[in-house]
Length: 190
Image 1 (cartoon, rainbow, N blue to C red):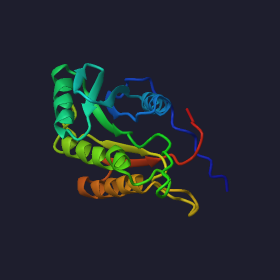
Image 2: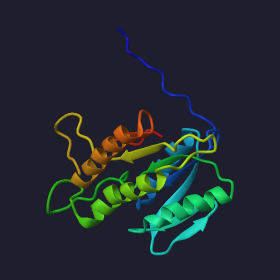
Image 3: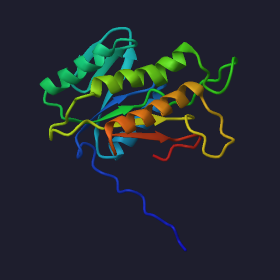
């Protein structure tokens, strides 16, 4: 039997509200991620990582290791009537960097900060937050090389840890609140 399922319809960017998107450092990966979020119907609010905190209406910069920056930026967006309806963690969306000391993507402090600890900070900042319709803010975690489907795919241990955290968060928050999408080593679909 034919198991063909039509692709989801693309939506007009912004028709579903705003999505706060923690972007990866690599510009191409960030652009791919932001495009995918927009095609899903959200107006993407990109948030980069930097040395100083910066809050703007539709772009922000957060400092590594400062979870209060996420809370402050969400508060700033709310004060400017930006209706955030989705949180997207995409810091581990770029191709993992080879690490000569171990598996793909390594286990370095930088890899853990980018994939795991920034997700912990986002999850904690989102706890108790509500969207304009008074529903809990959902969290989407987009990764690359965090899940091995075939048994032969190279994994990044730091990203696999983020996957485990996303699974635990999903159990804590209830059905549909936390989603993990791992794109593996495939060419861009958008």
